[in-house]
Image (cartoon, rainbow, N blue to C red):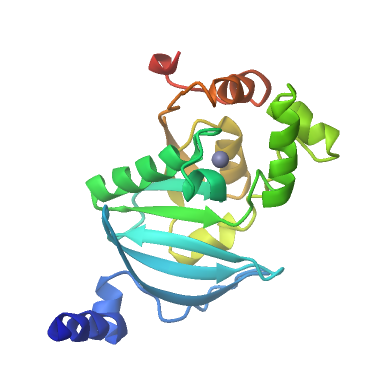
Length: 229
Ligand SMILES: [Zn+2]
C-alpha cells in the first residue's frame, strides 16, 4: 500500500509523467480575468482524469476534468456542466443534472478521451438558496421560468464566457458538445469555438422532473431525443 501511494505521488509530481497525463504545470496563455491555479490527478469510477482548477475574476473556483490526449486539434467530446448541488451531489429528482453529469463522465471514460467543464454557477446562475426559493414557488404551482422571473431573475442567468479561458488552457478548440440545449452550442460558437457535433443527452424523466423538463423544452428551447417523448 505504501508503495502504491509513493508511485501515485511520483506520477503526480514528475514532469515527464505529468506531460503524459495531460497536466500543465503552469500556462502562459492569457486568461482574461481568469487564472489557472493548480492541477492534479483525479481517479474516478469512469477513468483517471486530470483536474485543472481555474479561478475567475470574482474568485469563483471552476474545474476542468480531462482524460487522454485532447490538445491534438481533433474534436473533443466535451460536457459544459453548470453546478447543481442538489442534483449532482444529493441525488435530487427535481432535475436531470445528476444523470447528465454521470452520463458525460461515463461517455468520456468509455471513449478514453474528453473534457468536462464544471462551472460554479449554481441554479442556472442564481445561487443555491435562490434556487430553493424558486423550488418553493414551483411547489405552489409556478413553472421554473415563472418562478425565476417572480424572484426578479432572468429565466437563465448563466454566463459561459469563462469557458473560453478554460478551453484555451487545455488546448481545445473543436467540440463534440454533449447537450440538449442549443443555446449552449450558440454560446460556444460566439466564443469562437467550433461545435462539430451536438451529442444528445438522456433526459431521464421521472414523476418529479416531468413538468420541469416539459418547461425546458417548451419555454427554453431544449431539444430532447425522440425516445425521450
Ligand atoms: Zn439540477
